[in-house]
Image (cartoon, rainbow over all chains, first blue to last red; front, top):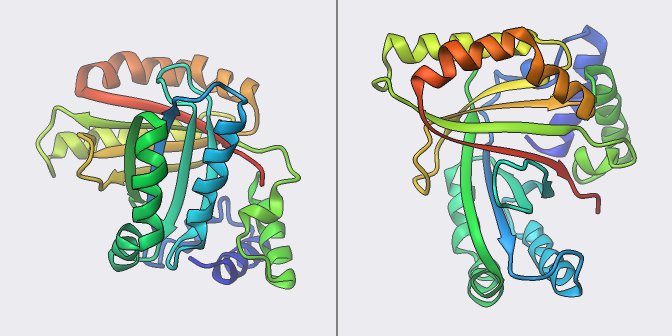
Length: 128
Length: 128
C-alpha cells in the first residue's frame, strides 16, 4: 500500500467511521512486512550506534521498500535493542531488495561487523 | 493513534504528498506496538489451530488494544508460524491489557497449553 492509497483509505475511514483503517483495506493484497530486531556491539548512545542506524536508514531508498521504519525495541523479554521494519508489495519486490547491491553491501560491510544478535521476522496479516 | 487521527493523518498525507503516512505523524506520541510470534503444537490447518487463533482474536476486545492483527509468519529464518500484533497508546494501556482477566485467563488456559515456542517483541518507532 503506497502513501497515496494509504491516505485514500484513511480518508474513506474518516468518512465512514470504520473502527480501524487496516480493516478497511483488507480487500487489497496484503503487503509483506519484513522486520529484523537486533543488538549492536556498540555502547548505548554511542556515535558508532548512531552511525549504524544512519547507514541502515539508507536502505529505505532501495526500490520496492515502503513504510521503512527504524524501531526501538522495548520489551525486557528479549535481548534486542533496535529493529528495522519495511513493507513490500510482493515477493518480487522483496527479492529485488534482498539482491540489490546497496543491501548486499550493507550486510557485508556494516551488518555482519556490527550486529551481535538478531532475529528476522516476516509476516502478512491474516484477513478477518 | 486512533482511527480518526489515522484517517486525518492520511488525509494530510494525501494533500501534502508526503512519502509515507507514518512519517507525517511523528509529532504525535508514538504507539507502543506489542507483538508475539509463535508456533503451535497443532497440525497445520487443523481445527485446533483455527480454534486457538479464534480465541486469540478475542483479545482484541480488551480495553486499550488498538489495531489488533493476526499475522502469518512467512520467513524461513525462524520457527514461528503465526503472530499477534496490537498497539497501545501508552504503558498504562499496555499494563491494563496485561493484567486484564481475559488476557490472564487466555494465557493460563490456552496459550500455555497450546504454544510450543514463542518470541515477544515490543517497539516504538524512532522518529527521523
